Image (tube, rainbow, N blue to C red; front, top):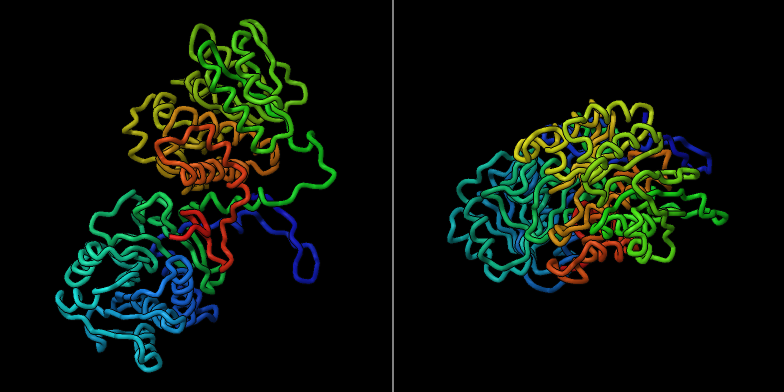
Length: 542
């Protein structure tokens, strides 16, 4: 059962809310269709949904791509085209010069899209509406476009694009105009979990509705690491949004990190993290992990490291406590809330055996990374035993995952989602499988997909930083392991995004990410217009 939190209702009474109900669910195309159908049954007409969708696209496009240049809405004959038609009308109302390129004849437009087309033609005579029947007419309609609204096909479409739709894709690609995709870039299969979609429209931003689909979280839909992918609320009743995938978005967990701390809090309130790691020549790993735990908000952090590197680790921050270890000693565990084990420990001599025994014997919440994971290579069943009745978080990259399970990296990457879910449920652990769209798999089978982060983070030390952030969040939110781990992964990637924006993707170091954690904490996932940014930095203009 999910964590139950208290919230004040409109009358001031305390209401109980299951934290799972606040998660942003990820839907399939079929589930999105069912949500629309149920919305109608619950009293929200398709026309209302279309009006809200079009208005959301227009508001986002006006704000994000401000200017006075020509806007061309390229519309298909279905409901996606209807959304684009409403958006075009709203942008015309706002004073933009707008042209609509309808792919086909108006007599072929059906349903609510027909209503949107008719109203735009009758009530907005200033809109230049063109019925496009060949490529030459489409080329002419796109002349002078500063911004294109891609409203050709949406969630229900199955590739490939053909005819005028394919021509529109190619002509828009050559136009140089900014492109806002309505729902998703036309030609992209909403159920795809691939990073790229061959044959789909290019996009600078995507505005989808009610809930993200699989493609929105797994695909790189825009040409930039920071291209916005936005989920706009359009009036879909929450009970209509149901998902059987067990997938949700990590960013929804950020709410737990936005609750102000109690005024009478003290360092003991926020836990004591122990980082156990390091070896000769590898002082940086435990130092970075410890620094990240401090910056994440843990009340106290102690690094337990070998004697020969104590001075180097201690120098990372005066706030860090350091305990020196020799070959036969173990760290002091009194008062410790969470342990992070593995960064920089190496695999020499008896170290793997020491790690396995420590994990077995010390029954505290534990984050196991790097050489901590390598100590269990081929012995994953020992983690199952250790995880009984306690919290164990594993944070492998694909190589570490492969070594742990005796697989190849190719086999790990072949079914990341299925593998992550299986390992988490079979072993009773929380698994953070790093990589493109890091997955956070929970023992109950739920999986959160992370959408923050960028190529600048492909540097040594990034994994150590993540371990520290996860440990720091667990120390503060020990009663909500799932959200603590999810928000840690989300914040790590978001801090990396802010670091990259401030520098260049070549120059960012892992420790620069720590320096931008404050921006990640202060950033909001929902903007002033109520739109949720699942990709991109909210408020950053094109």
